[in-house]
Structures are given as C-alpha cells and as structure tokens.
Length: 254
Ligand code: G3H
Image 1: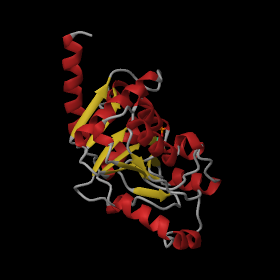
Image 2: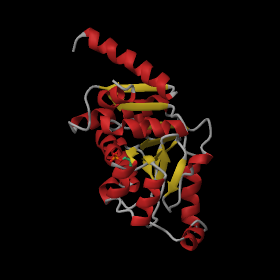
Image 3: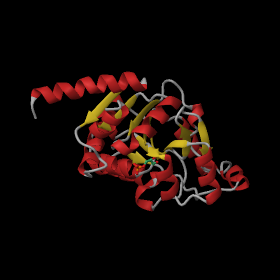
C-alpha cells in the first residue's frame, strides 16, 4: 500500500467522524458486502480499540450478529482481559445460536482468557414473563452487571434485513415500514432521524440508560449499511465507530 492511500484513509476517518458526530472513526480497507475477510479486519480493529479503552475489572457488554461473531473470532489471549467479564447486552432476539450475544460473549472471553456470564432468556417474552424473570436472583445479578458495563460493543444492521433475518411477524414488518425504520441495533429499530420506532421484547441493556462514562464501540461495515449507520448515530453518536471503506464512502455520499 502506498503512503498516499494510508493518508487518504486518515482523512476519510476525520470526515466521517465529523459527518456523524462520532469521537473517533477507524476505517479498514475494503467493503464487507463484497469480501468476508473485511469483517475480520473490522474485528481486528475492534479488539485493538477494546484493549486501548479497557480498565481493569471492566464489564464488557456485547451484542449479537455476524460482525460481532467475527470480532470474537479474531480475539487472542491478552493479560488485559484477565480481570474482564464479558456479558451479553440483551436477551434472545430470534437469531441463530452462532450469532447470539451469549455465544459471542462467551467465545470472546474464552479466546481472550477472560471471564464471562450468560443471560438465559428466551426470545419474544410476554410482558408477564419479563416482569417475573427480572425478579429472579440470577438474572437480577446479570442485569446489574450489564448496567455497569464500562464498554458496550455492538453492530448495526439495515432495519429490513434484520427484521427478515429474525423472522419478524407481519404486523411488526408493517410497523417498521410505516415508520420508515432504517437501522437496527441491540433489538432497537430507528428511523433515519434516530428516533426509536420499535423495540424487541427482551431484557438487558436499556439504551436510554447509558451514561456518559460508558463507552460505546460500534462495528459496522459494507456500503449497504451506510444509511443504517447514519440513522443510528442520529440517536446517540458512539465513542468509536469501526467501519470499512465501502460504508465510509456511502456515508459521505461519494
Ligand atoms: O444486531 C445485529 C446487528 O444489528 C447487525 O448484524 O453484523 O450480522 O450485520 P450483522
């Protein structure tokens, strides 16, 4: 790679950061819509960020999805993770086991030689079930850990892609369409202005409860996610966005 293209990427990182009001943007080369290895590079960059931001004894809450699964795959043992506990950000969202946040947080912990705790909650809970589950001592303890997370790591998806992948019912698909949902993250759906238009019925991280001192790392690449990334950042600009050239170009509209 030439020096010129390296400098070019740094410039783009600043442009995207300004456009999305995100503190720090990291762009990896390529477009993950086209090549799966680009997601692995997103994963590598994400782990480096986590290491830079970690405090001893930190709780790291991780969301689900194929991007986060690749982050977990890229994890390697590091002394920095030995006192860290990985927890899933929220309960089940109707995804395959391999890309559920429970699986991803435990995989990350095992590979990092850190610690993990699981949150066993089925998908699509009724209100009654949620209300009684959150009183269970084991679950209460997990929810307390999730709320204390120093770092939250998550992906972003295009709303329609995510709803279809999770087998959303027709009435939900209709709501998402009517309200022009553009993005999905943590089981929350957002329109292009960053307004929440739908929430999956599960427990765990409540986005509106996130404090200033809780650091959020967003990992999302591919030109197809540009609109979703912008929409989500209108809700709450993350501390760090890790993305790829494909998405960055589309976010900047060129
Ligand atoms: O929660 C999942 C994310 O919104 C996106 O998933 O990484 O498979 O695209 P993905």
